Length: 189
Image 1 (cartoon, one colour):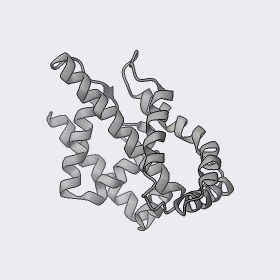
Image 2: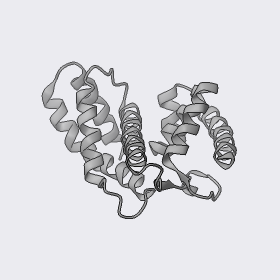
Image 3: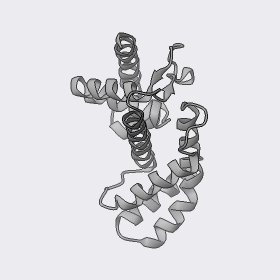
């Protein structure tokens, strides 16, 4: 998404937050493709034949985003961070429900993404990754948030720094520490 489009998204989010329903319609047009890209990335980590389709994930997340009109949107990065968090919750809930229904059947497998600088890892199921991330959040919420924004949200270091109001160097340090902690935690299980 270009800087100009990103700025337009930010302006529309602010207008929508102030009650402008026309802004919501315009926003939908601008963000749908990006939400679909994000959902496709998530679904790429899921097992083949997953019954939840990319479009269904986008639609479910979008409905929840639209329903969260009480959120005070800061900017485009904040919007996509919330969208990523919602998609993660939808997939984890889906996986937990499936596990419950199958009484311990195979869980969805995800690998930590090499494109974000993670070393090649054996597959870790999304539920275990979510559990580990929740544990990290108890110890260090900011590092957990960095992982959520970078890995799940697909935000750049700079966008993550903007959302968290810290420097890009701080994001880099948090990212590296969090990856090492998660890697250790996932290997223990």
